[in-house]
Image (cartoon, rainbow, N blue to C red; front, side, top):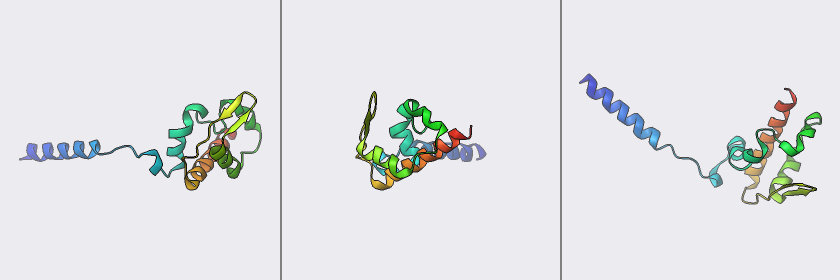
Length: 109
């Protein structure tokens, strides 16, 4: 009987774990989740990214400036960022606040 209970519990745990699907990006709300999905590949956890590391000595960017870059892109000299117009205003704001937090934590290191 004890073996059967243990086996049933184990099978139930495996079923529940298998049902944990990834959230589609259009339903993501967390700035960290959105950043990891859309931004991390290019920006590598540094907020402004490898091409803008010189900003580490300056104040973190304002969230509204980051939102403008997210929604309208950025193109200056050799550096550019694509437009992410698929993000809602709330998602862009969540990403911007996460980037500011990353910039602040990077400055403290």
